[in-house]
Image (cartoon, rainbow over all chains, first blue to last red; front, side, top):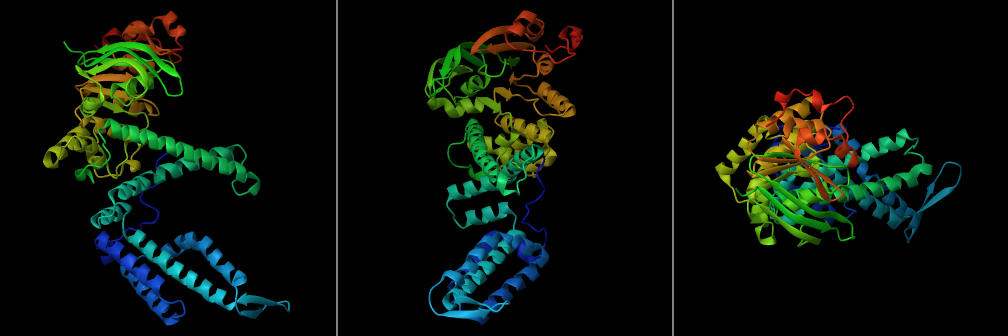
Length: 230
Length: 256
């Protein structure tokens, strides 16, 4: 047992970016992402400018890029999807010569669309990771509260933060128990068993949710968290 | 004298038709420490959830009445009932859900309307009683299991309950944590009802034991007498750990 210390996304530090109030950081992130999304995808130099601003903030926060980049793997499924677009999109096509004497035919519109998705996605993920690296999860929640984010959503998110480790540890123990009985989670042959584990994990978490709710009712919970304890 | 707990003819069936309790009578008087023993599936948890009105005749198919220090457990009394009856659940991860130990212990009293310095004092007093005051600002999931169990006790103590109800307090604790918790529980000035399978723990802490089996109270007496009644023990799937014999425990080390 025993959960890991600190959150996996947070990079401990004391830079001006770390010390900035969380609600300002959340607003800045939102503004930045909206700006990136609103930029037409063929204004190539502007994206370089976006990236420069973002890297400037990362440098100011003194978070090493070697810390952020590996965490960008969450974006991979999205990038795979973007990479498919040039193959399936309509419109004029360009040929790309391939080794072996044949040509790969790609849609021009598709290429531009894929570029747009990839660059906007990457900038957004990197900016979000920068926020996560410089702000403790609880701080983010307090920031959202100060921004008058609906209370119920903040409560749900705070429970998510609290129980993420517990549920991950649950899953870890279940997978260890399966491995001990000869299951290899990497082999597709065993994926059905793994899927059932996820189902069981869902049921377990649901039941835990009910027990937590009981424990809350037992201490006088009436639908809203008391002001003073947050 | 008004009993702290007064259960009369409590019967309960779950919505799926499973009948868990068949008319339970139980009285616990102020200052008593009582162990509630019984095999798995005897209805202990169902009974505990009746004590603060999570389950009741109003919520399912049940009969009988529960009163806490004279106050009947009904919908309109629920908040006061839940202040009077503090339940410590078995898995501390179910009970500790806030971001820090301090916020978690404050959750109950804040629901009762306490604020500011009074709230802070209540929180620190409760943490002091379980020896966890130094950990007030730590997130609960960074504590050891034994520490989390102690904080779970503090979350309930902070509501200044009239009766503390513990569900399997010694489960999953290492022997040192188990003993430390016993020392803490012995030192508390509060009525105690302890649901447990740990019979030596019951003998160590509780002068009186109640045995629940098949949804009925089948024995109620001195813990020593219950544990040494071989016929009763065998009839209700109660077994002492190997090598443990209550008769060899020095009489003056028994409680009360």
